[in-house]
Every structure is written in structure tokens, then in C-alpha cells.
Length: 375
Image 1 (cartoon, rainbow, N blue to C red):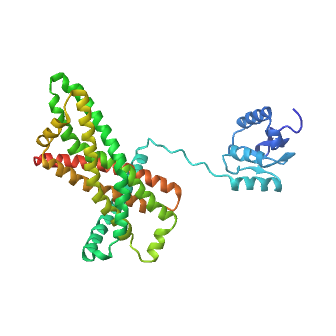
Image 2: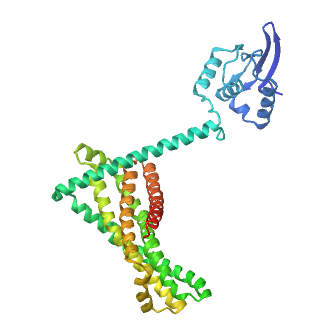
Image 3: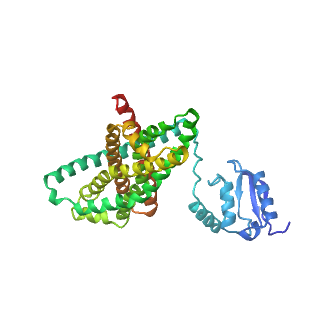
């Protein structure tokens, strides 16, 4: 071993055992794999203990790499017995000042950690619920203001949102509805043909599409298409500080942003729902004619007897609730976007997921409530 090789000698002194460091403790020497293994082995033989002193004065060279190695070996605390030169102390002091303490590893399985995490989620949920409640209350006040003075309402915004959320959504909803009708008819034909009950496909398609699948399918498509657009539009306004400018000018967010979108989507959603249901029925009618030889004329004649008018009214009522809920959720997440692009993406994703989940929950509530009263 050369004189410049980093090494540790244990010496007995009147003050007790001392670990004396010799050689060059620098990046050039410690960068060698052989030298590193040798030094690591010697450090393991001399663990940091209050009874062991450290003497750095015999060192030929010490830089920040060697100082960091020693500081980590000392468990990031100064030894009780320690001798060094002023220059060596300055290097060690700088290393100690720039070394961050490692945080304790999170114990995800501790009961207290799980309870804390659950509490944080509950508080976040309550905060979102409070904000939604405030938004609904403000929407009711804005609707009363609209009823008192209709001429001051932002009708141009409402008409623009009606076109963007309603008219431009017709092609995709019709296509998806048509394909869903074809798939349902083919699946039902495989089962009904076994029992000779081909004529009941009109009843099954009519009730399932008009009462349940048509409005819910249209709402899910609109939630992914228009709900995300609402959140992105308002979120971009937050990023570009347009919302702050509106507040400075005294323009209320609810009357100019939330109410036009909610009113437009609540009006457009029933029409989109009926349009999607008609497209699905057309697809089911075509598939029934091809797979089961049920003519379109019989389908049209048997449909009014299979589906009551009350089911169509229920579907339209659900569509209105779906539209208002999607718009409110989109505005809620848009207004909560922070002025950065990451928050904008997270808010848009959360808006779509929350809207689709809410649509399914509301549809289930409608189904249970109206089943109990016989509709």
C-alpha cells in the first residue's frame, strides 16, 4: 500500500483509542474501486462510537468527497472526540451544512398512517362538496336574477354553448348509439331465437334504450366531450389570469361562466338523449331485420305498445339532470384549477371521471326511485 492510499490506523492515546486517518482522502483516490472497497472495509471495522476518537491531522489531502464519506460514517453528527486542522474543519462544516437529513421511510401499514390518509381524503371530499353546494346556491340566485331581468342575461353565451355542446355532438352520439343498438340486437337475437321469442326483441330494445341506455350513453359521451371542454376552458382562463381580471372588473363568475353553460347543457341534453336513442333504435331495427327477419314496419308498430309514454318522460327528465350535473362538475373543477398546466390536466381528468361516475349514480337513483312508485 502506498503512502498516499487512504487508510485508518487505530492508536492508543491517554484519552482513549483514536482512529487516525492517513493518505489522501480525495475523489481521485476514492474513485478507484479497489481503494473504495478497502476504505469501506476499514470504516466498517471502526464504527462511529462515543468512545472512539478521530484524528484527521495526519491526512495528506482531504476534499469534499472524503469529507462527505466521513460525515456519513459519523451518522451526520460530530464525534465526541475529534482533532483536525482548521482547513479540514471548514470542509467538514460545509459538507454538514449542505447535507440534508434523510426522511424516515413512510410506514404505509401503520394504522395511524391509514387513519391520517383517510382523514385527508374526507376533508378533501367535504371541501369539494362545500364548493359544489355554494355553486348550486349561486346558480339558483343567478336564475332568479335571470327571471327578474331576462334582457340582461348572457343569451349570446347560452346560444354559443348550445351549438358547441349540442349541435356539434350529434354526429358522434348518433354513430355510437347506432352501433350500440346493432350490438344489443345481435346479442339478444342469439338468446331469443333459442326460445322462439324473437318478437320480444322490440320490448327489450325499446325499454332498455329509451328508458336507460339511451340517456346514460348520451350523458357519458357528453361528459367526456363537453364536460372536459368546460373544465379546460375555465382552467385556461385561470392560467391566463382572465378569471382574476373578471373579478377585478366586478364580473361574477357564476352569472357569466357557470349559469350559461349549465343552462345550455340542461337544454341540449334532452335533445341529444332523444337523438341518441333514435339512432340506437335504428341500429337495433336494422340488426333485427337482418338477424331475425323482423321487419321495420312491425318494429315501428310494436314499439308504442312495448314502451309507455312515461318511460320517455322519465328519460327526458333524467337527461336534464344529467346535463346540469355535468356542466356544474365541469365548472367546479375548472374554477379549482391552479395557475399551472399540471393542475389543468389533473382537473380535466378529474372532471371527466367525476361526471361519468355522477351520471351512473344519478341513473341508479332514478331507476330505484321510479321503480318504487311504479313508473
